[in-house]
Image (cartoon, rainbow, N blue to C red; front, side, top):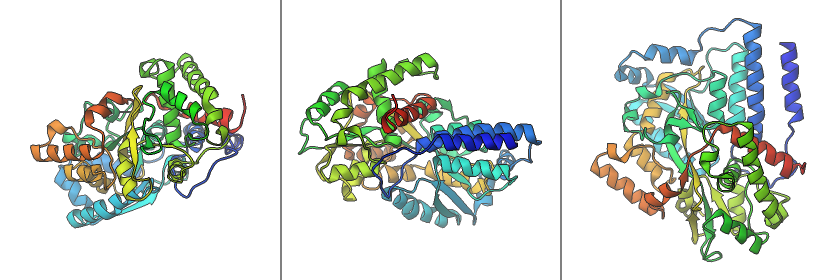
Length: 444
């Protein structure tokens, strides 16, 4: 194990932080850190297998196994009066208000469950679970995790999640199980180890006063950037890399050219498409492409302050909520590029060392209820898309969701026509690393 530990430290030393960024108090997923964490997970997992016998079944998995044959009422009975610690991203006021002000009180009233939402995502989350397992702990502190994409893949590969469990939830019967972004998380089958709770789609935001005729395709966007130097940028975190994947699809032959896993030939095609486009346009970016907002919250501030004329979001429907919160100008409107914009889902998972798997399942089930899905769909609350299939709801709920969709300013047909699925999570990780090397570090 000594050699393994040394090699792990070497990886951490040689993947240093980028040189320049515009900082913010808000946070988004840091995929550079997450990529490094995945390397550590792989090495640590291999070292554990070679250095000692497999530990006892962790508490979360043991609980899932014991609950598997019990009726749902018994699961609820075990959860009643307990505390569920939920590790999640806490960087958005609207999301926090939904979790703390709507979800938590209803869990307390109906089940006596105390929900404690705490910060924890990406690399930090993965590293914490690896460290606990290395220390031999069977029981951790968190019972529920907000995950998707690379985080889910890393946790699965390291066997850090409990399951399968999500199909046992009564609410699972209402889920849009035909949607590819729900049954596969960045092309990886969820296999009962995650339960979906929201769906989002990438989009651009413009000020209709400053930009009354916004670009509608990637080609038009490029022409607009060159004609308006200094007025466009992207952030260096999750949303910015999603934007680069949009460019990869549009310039590299469409999503089908990259679907079905990753290999060297497809990666090179995608990489060259993205960085060829950046090479042609980056000099006309904000600050000539030499600095970037750290996350989407910082980019929203640049937009609101008039420093740039476009911002972007992984949730195109959040525009109304951000206007209501005073984050974006009242004249902000969403734009979906005709080339396609990425749609994905977010999930909750139960860690293998969860101390309260029954409570976590009850929380996940309430998140799938029509009332919980509708509340966060409301654009004045959050604008998060539902994971439910409308055909499985009664007429009253269908009408409510239709009204919420209309209030977003984009009808379902428009969103569906532009939607493109995620590809293998490795594309995201490689684009992040390549962008840091070429753009942030300036290495050809």
